Length: 430
Ligand code: PLP
Image 1: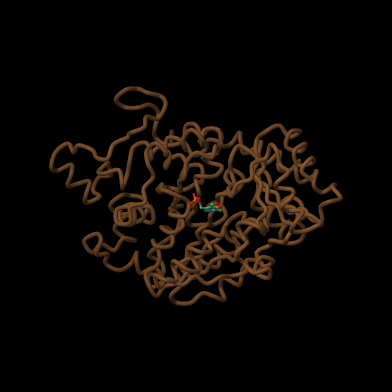
Image 2 (image 1 turned 180 degrees about the vertical axis):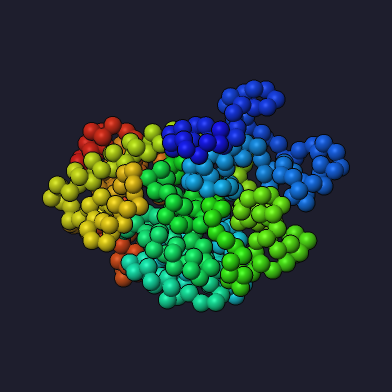
């Protein structure tokens, strides 16, 4: 069902063109655990390779189980097409590689998941792609760092540990005037934020987190809004406006919409160039696991958010805690942003600072009985970590503070257990 007017709860279950399996009538999406697909005849094969027809060639590039997931998530995010990949990190890497060649740059928000920070500051840097970091407090910082080699802007909707919501519309507008698309990692705010509605051109997710929802599978996805005009500022997007040696010298920005009848150019390039050449495809079994997770995402996310609010509220009243970091409790510009962009709940993450600092942070973690101590977010279970002694321990004290990590900071990814049990565990651990 492709009706875009359905609500998220319905799209999560019915979204996309899959109704039942064409050959067996199976209602559940089958796991097509195959590498390859028999062509009908020579003409069919040649049409598929020349993109005259879209269809299955080889599972590194596409797969019917994965396609159901891709269509549903594209619809949920309000995009035109999506490409699933083997991890959230891969989704980010592909989104950047789909814009940049050596010598180009992107401007990224400073407020990032640590793995993304490393990918940008070190790995892309070694490949000759520079990432310039802009403090999102003032959206104009993106404009200030932009030059003629800037190909994209990048940010997370709800970055932790600060949980300061990113000004999507403001930065997207700056980019559009300059021919630069905004990529938003919406991993921590599915359902509650719709970055494309606010002007983002590309959305990426780590499927590993709330969409999978059960901590069983690693995956990522790139959603193409279909709204970015790749040919408007030809000099700004050379990969879409110069003859592409990957595809018979096609000017992708012009030819893809002509041949396929839709502006899914970014998704097509990610699939037919990057998945083909770099190869980090999602396994069909993990795609199936994510389809199961997606079906209950809207329900689970409501519960995650409801519990997160109650945990934040409880922590606010506890005298061992000096500060609670929660989008619903912010003030000033960050309150405005969280009210504007987190439309259906203030997210599932809560941070807090223990008055007694580093040692009390470590002790709190060791005292936990129900809550898991893991370096992850987005599980059905409540998860906790003390960043100063783990994820951020390699950073200097000064750099830790810049990222929002104080010695007594604890990050909670609040799960879907009964709230009384979560609070009881926090209370005894405190
Ligand atoms: N984006 C965010 C916001 C994350 O938190 C993570 C992982 O923690 C990633 C991307 C990377 O996802 P994955 O672990 O699926 O590669």
